[in-house]
Image 1: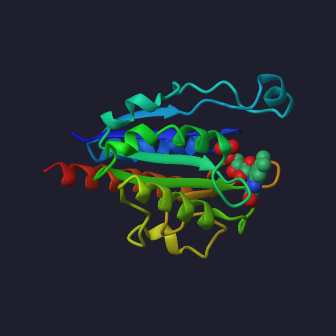
Image 2: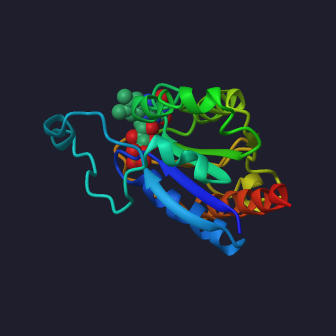
Image 3: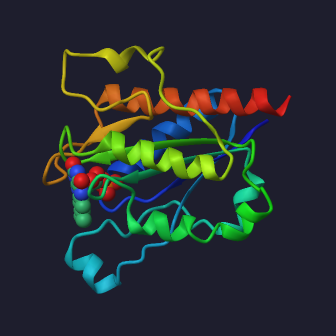
Amino acid sequence: MAKILILYYSTYGHIEAMAEAVADGARAAGGEVSIKRVPETVPEEIARGAYFKLEQVAPICTVAELPEYDAIIFGFPTRYGRLPAQMAAFLDQTGPLWMRNAFVGKVGSVFTATATQHGGQETTLISTVASLMHLGMVIVGLPYSFQGQATIEEMSGGSPYGATTITGGQGQRMPSETELAGARFQGELVAQTAAKLMV
Ligand SMILES: Cc1cc2nc3c(=O)[nH]c(=O)nc-3n(C[C@H](O)[C@H](O)[C@H](O)COP(=O)(O)O)c2cc1C
């Protein structure tokens, strides 16, 4: 059974909700799934003042445990068209693991959220994929075999580079059914791919 880590950061809970859907998909494909998050780096007083969702059930991940997993699915909101500092700070501690090729051949995958429809989801996903390739990960995205990818019936996230959701400027929109389906599809495909690579 492939061990799948869903490693996320979420300020306001949208990515937290997407992470649950990714986990459902990975479990449905037979993966042994853990959902964990990276530490908050914003001082608590400032975070509370900005209404961060500080209470989240997922435990905090350690860098040292990352090699235990066969696949890591990274989720985080977009910050100016790229990943947030919280996730970057976590990834920047993987140097010693990179030096011993600890991620080479493991599956890597990414999902994100933006406030606006064209707010940089694809740059966030693609730039993170580049980093994961430095680590030697085998990338799984969200292919067009996910039917919801091509919808024009509704406003929707989703891209070939990974599942996405659009939150609205005030965070008023939670992931739609189509976006959650994309997240589940990606989780399932990652678990299936990781299992194949274990053979
Ligand atoms: C500093 C900062 C930069 C942001 N940059 C972008 C951006 O480039 N494009 C965009 O559409 N939304 C941007 N947002 C909005 C976030 O992406 C949005 O709040 C997030 O996707 C919500 O997900 P969460 O609830 O999981 O934190 C930014 C928010 C902050 C605080």
